[in-house]
Image (cartoon, rainbow, N blue to C red; front, side, top):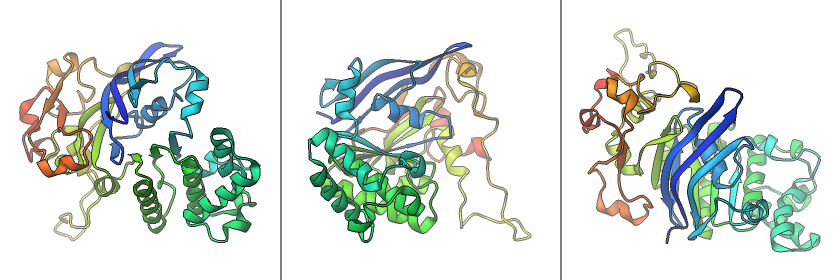
Length: 347
């Protein structure tokens, strides 16, 4: 039985202009010990997806579908039931540690709080455990610094503290939402190594959100590519990087800077590729393929017909060892757009 199984997840947001659909028919699985990456442009629904998994969706939201946790349905639970899960069995490392940490409480108190609430430890025991966690995540002289406040730490140290908070109750799933965005490259790698080490130590499952395809390729077993609140491509990481089946995925890959990219005759680098157009507002998304209009393969039916998931035979047997998804699938109406190595859309 998967640790986490999402089926047909939809999220609708009510506003002054009516109701819009922010998440569309999301389905995926996560096994214990596996790592799942979620990529896509800003506003595609990555953070909203993991917030919904933890019952933290906006107050004006309506959620349908199914989220099974160890076979138990989470949708429809009371707030008290959600609270028993959040920070205990499922925990999140947020993108910006300075806003995730309370500036008026010491870091020791904040790391200890989940253990007070979920484990029933007394304050002395919880503070001792918090000190050990801060040492584990690389905070030097933790026994003294446990009494310091967030502003007394660097950005990288604050991110380590949020990781310690997330690990306090030894969760089954660790969600890292762009955990290295505000950090320099050296500290980024240290934080990613730390996350991978503690996930392996405790046999947790990891959900990693990132804009960085390099980070995703090196740190997760499976990938979800999201656009317009929908998963447009999914599968084992190796399979997706070997054969990017969706034009949007290939566009993301073409847009990343490369040291080995060809140069102009003058020796200057070419301008970075950009995907045509802009991400439409949720109310303006096509009824059919959410990427219709920005894709050069677009036909009239792409605006109206909803593409089903199509399997691509790029999955290799050895990748099944750590994969929760097990298949490589793409949502596209145009078989010619999914040919291996097809870069026609981005010439």
